[in-house]
Length: 173
Image 1 (spheres, rainbow, N blue to C red):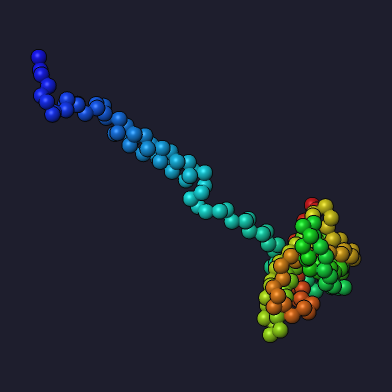
Image 2: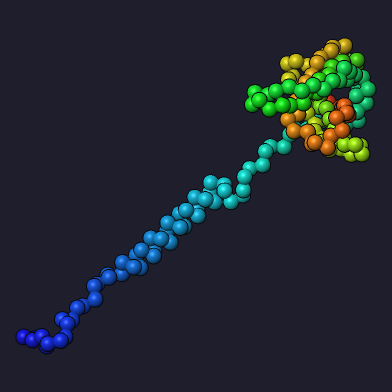
């Protein structure tokens, strides 16, 4: 039998780790791999999705030639409050189709200028885009376009308004 010697502590064997430290490391790496796969698979790697590009209407030679047959009249600006109680600038006007073709789409480009006549805001908007409400020859239609944020450098004058896209009603065969 083994006798204890005075002033010597009994020998204590180190606890048997059984490789549990290695198992914890493997588990941590597996969790990180699963998190990385989920992150990249869910689309976060490419950053936030960009808004879809606005659909531009055709503006080839036929559309450009037809522009002179469309009148834009009675353009006016006003201020209004939107549903979020923010003040917006509203551009109103009237369109008249003096041509011989019906239009299912019409796009306007609006430019606001500063005191030096430099463009401070340019936006293109479709004012006629519902095919079931085509603008027939000789027909007249009003439009409104709202602008929430116009730069403070705007010269407070009426912006320029020009047609930048047209879509004709398809001919019936």
